[in-house]
Image 1 (cartoon, helix red, strand yellow):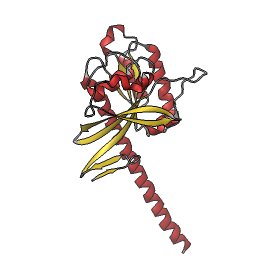
Image 2 (cartoon, rainbow, N blue to C red; image 1 turned 45 degrees about the horizontal axis):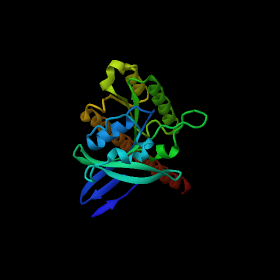
Image 3 (tube, one colour; image 1 turned 135 degrees about the horizontal axis):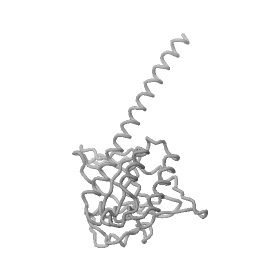
Image 4 (cartoon, helix red, strand yellow; image 1 turned 120 degrees about the vertical axis):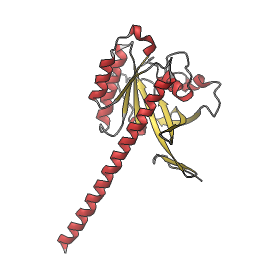
Length: 244
């Protein structure tokens, strides 16, 4: 038996529940979002820092990979523009988790101000904000994107992990670890510094941490919904008694 509920997060395969999470990657140009994505999905390093969304929607980056390594789902996410959502199933804490990863290209409007499409934010269960530790401008972009996310959605509604990439180029560092950590702490985000070029394990930790944050967020929302139902029920009972 296979039951799939796309907005309901959970997929049943036989008797095993499988959690589904939508992960949105954001950041400036050339910070290694695609390298991070490919490293997570395939354990491979693509050998360059670029954006999937800027290179024929990423198909060229996955040439030679078979279906067991990567599942690509083409979806219309933003106003008839096809975007590629790359999926992978991993086992975390004895539970299968299906990651749907959208590596979104960096965009600015005509006025050169930063913007984030609302459809992206509504789609995402969790967000990874990536900057390069060698590029201070990219760190400022992440700071701005984080502010936009917090204005667009309630702070507790979408978990965020801030990632400083290109740790292998630490000799060219222009953003300190402390700066990245303080930004993440100030906005209640997770924080990691990684090298997509060198290690798979550290990249995996980023996505595992995001899953834990998403689980906590969902549990909190579920608990809050339960409390609201109880309050409504109690109010209805007392209202009925007052009317008698």
